[in-house]
Amino acid sequence: MADLTKAYISQAIFISSTSHNDRVRYRQEDAENIFGSLFGSQSQQTNIPDELDASAPRLIFQSAHKQFLISKNSAQLVLGFQNADKPLKTQTDVIRENVLKVAKKVYEFGEVTGELGLVVTFNLPRTEPRTELSKKIYDKFLRTPAYGTLASSSFKVGFETEQKLYLNLEVDVYEMRRGVFNKTHVDVQNIDFSKLEVQETGFSFKVDINNKPRFGSHESYITEVELVMRSLDEFISTRLEDHVKL
Image (tube, rainbow, N blue to C red):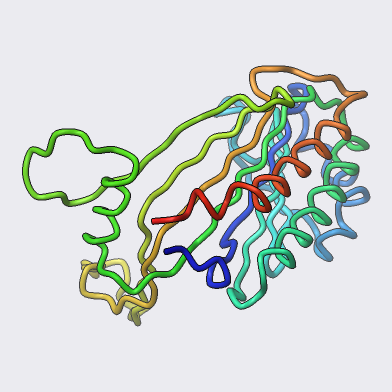
């Protein structure tokens, strides 16, 4: 049975599509004036050649647990959570505050298409070995004919909500391992991750809420952001517990 008091958010990613801009790297001063106060740092140029992938970041802001990436056609906020002891409510409040602040700055920085999404990863630590956790996913969601001993399993499904958003759910097994590396010889080391000490094992639940392929508009952008945040709150309060019963 799932114990949501042990669940925590490990990462949240908020991404907004923007109108294509080949010269976004030359707007570094504008970007720092608009976004700098949110991250307490200056931006960095990635020096990626202009002819390469338009979605690759050209400008990056970085702070302790936040990263903000600006490409030719998108803006992406990545939030990491180091303290797994905080309750989900506290963590979602942090996500909402940061997403809304960044969204308003993105709206100010340039033309947005209205297409956006939020991906949140929940970790639920368990004591069972990885193979047994995989079997629980298989038993609940899959039940396809077996071709041998089950080695791994994951599950993904997508829905269209009443608000005409798209909600994708993904279930997998995760392991966190720890080891010590000799930095002076890291270029010649062959690292066997299977021999590293396992710190935590459990279920990973990824929730992706977006409005693709429904395109909004620049004017409706903030409204769409707030709708996505409300959908996340609703999912956590009414659906998450049933989803993680494994």
